[in-house]
Length: 66
Image (cartoon, rainbow, N blue to C red; front, side, top):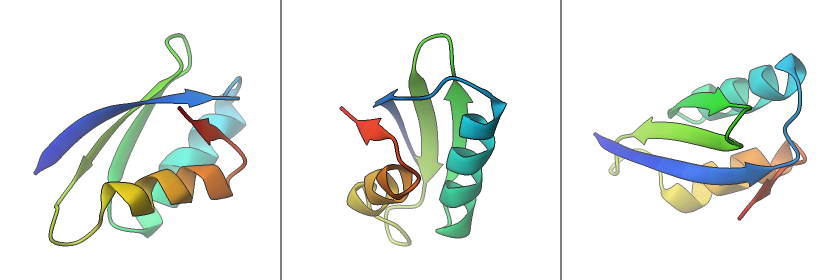
């Protein structure tokens, strides 16, 4: 299990939390959004999903991974 923290811009409300965490769950990763710090803590199995796919899933929801 790999754990990584991503800096994400554009998150401001509970809808943002739900959309990001839901999108990550759909691709097989677990995510925990922290609005105060503007970060997403992700946990995933490297042989099931890539960090690139995780970033893409977040960006498809309309947020910027920096």
